[in-house]
Image (tube, rainbow, N blue to C red; front, top):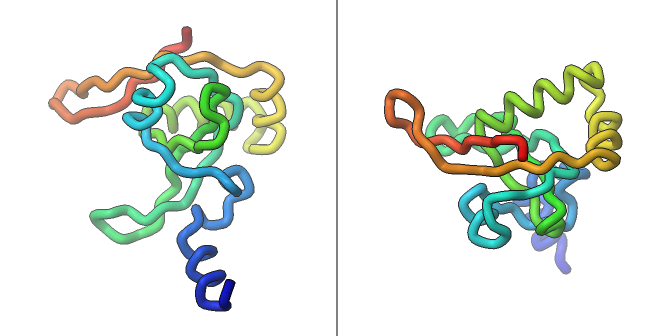
Length: 127
């Protein structure tokens, strides 16, 4: 590959996050189409992505599941709250949290629903 090809490839990866290396990105809708709406989360993390509206970088909660381990799933606010709670258990240590999660993966049912004001969001319920 040329310098330009290598540079372009690196620039389009999810900010060279070690958790996403070699994985393709899915959203929750794609996940459900491929694996159903009950998945076992084995790894969780944040990836910096560009907000389509503001063009600013933001931390997006993501996860990897046992059912399709070759993809990382871009999740929403509901999963972000779960990820924050898990991180708090490990005093912010993402690697320690993921070691614990690999030892004790958590199965979730994921459903598309709406907030009280009608906005769509993904609901995560422990199975």
